[in-house]
Length: 259
Length: 263
Image (cartoon, rainbow over all chains, first blue to last red; front, side, top):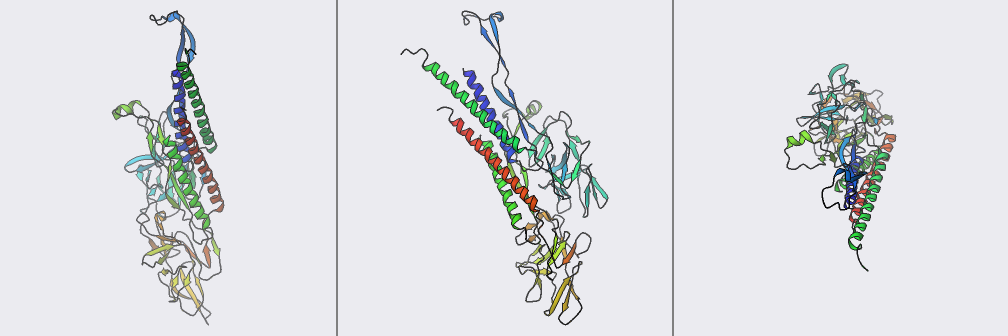
């Protein structure tokens, strides 16, 4: 009976954590280049439930042949991981030559402080010295260096080469994660490779789209449905908890009472 | 439960600000030289879901993947779109539209130089060219008192025709100022922008110099607000606001249910 209470509690805890993640996705519905977090929920180790066929099971150790298997018994669920959904978000045409979007799963390299970080938010502009920077003011890297854009008409090719007035200025460092790699979020629209992930590699097909911005890949309908389901599943687990609590109460207080 | 509430509230606030920015853009649909702005959204810091207190960091890094939890969104700043609005003919001699990245310079009452794209000009009692709030246009152009008609050439040369005369005569030339990072300018209201550290110093030049733009007389630059885009943004912001409200409500219901566990 107590096992059932723990199963219900585990389910409530998972729905609470799911809502935490869904609420953060919902909050970032309008964040350009945001990647949704996807909670991964798995069940706990299943136990093999058995019934001991012996008259006095507590008297001594029970041998295997005295146990009749009743099949597996789940012991609840828990959140094992949160993955980043790398599906590209919808592109929005802005017509601004400094707005760049990535069509593939790749990332722009930027310098945040002294460290290289990665972003999908291509809402760039020039700082006062003419360097290409993100909306947060982080320097955008091209060939491992910040890139200075002179006055003139800027054209960025699909491969990320920057031309100003027909002259090649540099090529944006567009990277992608090799298989088995993993991104962590660093906040402020930045990503970094996880601690034990391989380093990102130059992207095979950067697919840079000039004059476009990538929106968040959070799906409004999907998120609404999941928020609703998290509440109802929490409710179901809460009922399950209460029922078992009542049953336990009866077992303790009423069984064996002589009236 | 607090993370969900915190993230939802952050989302509500950010989308409310988004709607305010769109409202301001829409309200200035008919303001000459108005530049549309857009909030720069960003996600906030992430915290690790798993607590691993007391373990040396190397061990943690080598063995454990830490799931992350975000704490919502925020607006980092406003980006102003300085692209040209459509020049609209008005027929008024003292109306001026700028095509290209340049700004007119005006001397503000406190002596500072402001930069504007609003080309509704007037002549003050001292015969100086001023903007519609009475700030003197720099460099100063003296307009003769008996002028009958005035025109401004694309290269900024101001020409007047005096009463009784048939010819236009050049009396001065307007300048333009441009910035490497106009996004860094401070919007001081009334269409006036001020130089800041992040905008850098202005570069001065004459209209029709490469990269400065040109002047169109008897025209006004319309606000560069795209009405359809603004309406679409407004609907999107409202939907995002609703979604965050729903998440907040759900979090509240979940807390209430947890409180009712033991009746």
